[in-house]
Length: 195
Length: 195
DNA sequence: CAAATATGAAAGTAAGTACTTGCATTAAAA
DNA sequence: TTTTAATGCAAGTACTTACTTTCATATTTG
Image (cartoon, rainbow over all chains, first blue to last red; front, side, top):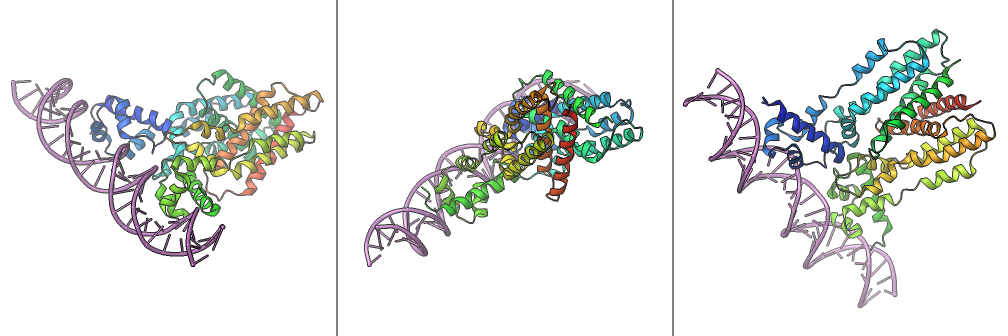
């Protein structure tokens, strides 16, 4: 099928860039070819269908593993520092996959959205990890948990909301304000959860 | 143009329902006509273009006013109760406009997204209102504000994230879990902000 | 060099899309 | 009753879209 990796990569990059901006339905194969600097026929020779292009793009999308690893050996038992690490890692990973998440959020008229929902269900997976962390911290007397599920959910949804909100803004939105948000929000949760 | 209000309403309802599910680009005028139970020609006689249909749908969309009014005379100076009222009102309004927000989030290839972004910038408007509220509460010695902008932002983004996340889930998601979240999250912020 | 492989160029296909036109029918307003 | 307005129906237009086919031209590989 494809020996020339570079051409496939150019096509996938163009696919992701355009679909993140205009959605799956709003992006034409002609535009993708133009943006990739190849002939339109070439993209069909590489991927066969438009749908396959999206699938190929999403196969580059992993994030759950990184986060799971963070919980197993990246935290040190200090609530403030751990929440900070968690928040920063979360936004780092989400930003890496920014465009793919945009595509998933926009959705499409007739696509296997099993794949698409995979990306959008981001906070749910993390909720369980964080929830377990809080319970274990509670057993050490380091935090008070009344409702660990919802406490974890609140923290994750806050970060998810921040990410989504920044997604729709002009890139003028600085890295500084993200850090400022992360620090302040972690301060809030640390004070709220500390006995 | 349109004397028969009922027909226009049926068309707009179908437009909103379908576009919320499949996006602007993924929804055809043929489908809209079918779902509305009218002939395709009729929808063009009423609205002229597909773009006009979306505009007409969005003209039913108001929320900023309700929220502004809430801040001017719906709060009583008790932090916990006020945050609770705020949160509940926010989710009530967002749920009322759920489908229009879905459409806005999905976007479209070639639409005046000035209108679309209007809906998605939800938390930004509220941030200022809440931020001012916190400052005024601080002057009464009722809360400690280190960074009112970011404290307000954290609270709004948390609720925005919760809303968006629930948007993509099966409707099985109960009203109960929303209330549970609201109560727990307000408890968290109340404890964090109380001197 | 010779043969395989990847790409471009040009043209085309079949289906869909937003939107139009002309005419007949029904129901409401005068 | 006569006129007016709203709708349905059938057909069509001009354009776009994903995808194909054929052939020529590079580039790589053996």
